[in-house]
Amino acid sequence: MSTLEIRNLHVTVETENGTKEILRGVDLTVKSGETHAIMGPNGSGKSTLAYAIAGHPKYTVTEGTITLDGEDVLAMSVDERARAGLFLAMQYPVEVPGVTVSNFLRTAKTAVDGEAPKLRTWVKDVKGAMADLRMDDSFAERNVNEGFSGGEKKRHEILQLELLKPRIAVLDETDSGLDVDALRIVSEGVNRAKEGTDLGVLLITHYTRILRYIKPDYVHVFVDGKVVEEGGPELADRLESEGYDRFVTAKA
Ligand code: ADP
Ligand code: MG
Ligand code: MG
Image (tube, rainbow, N blue to C red; front, side, top):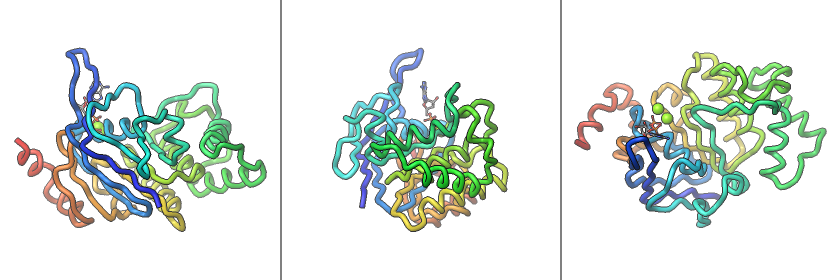
């Protein structure tokens, strides 16, 4: 059992016009086996929350706490967070020139587990996961994210999710830019990662459509740097029909 607990989180970034507060008191708890959807309009700070959990140096936590099973996540380096079982799939994955997918995955797996994976089972696992995600074998020899299409980037993120076996996964707009088929394949990958494990998922999205494939237990509406409403899956249906307007006006 793992619990990711975010309490009164305030985060700022440095902009050309000075320091800007983006997260303004986020409270959120994600436990093993639970799937939480964070839904909010563009610019509400969803990616900032993901970056703060991941430990991106550009985002400064000015107040509040993030803990994983009581351990202070904010005191951990990015690597330590990964070893502790946190996984982040970025909205905009970065290119890693000169590093193949195959090497990248093996290095990441070794870093997370603290030992290199057994070669035979590893090769089999990678091939199996790639086949499940309808990725051609040749994909393993391409450089990470270099010239990847939007769909390939997202599949590569889910490939990592399936192979690294984190305890809590934060998926930032894993649905963005995907056509219906790719969305289904990527969603099935997330569901496979959840199956038979107690993976906790924090699914960040702007649109409700991914929630047709990945069923959330809880939905949080995120506006202007904080959670303004919480509920079950029915809240997503309401957002689908009503949009975010009501919540945006409500805060003004
Ligand atoms: P979302 O993911 O919900 O669309 P973001 O977290 O990306 O929102 O951004 C929230 C707000 O913070 C936006 O107004 C965005 O322009 C601003 N912001 C985020 N990161 C930076 C940054 N590195 N520098 C300047 N502004 C930023
Ligand atoms: Mg955005
Ligand atoms: Mg975003």
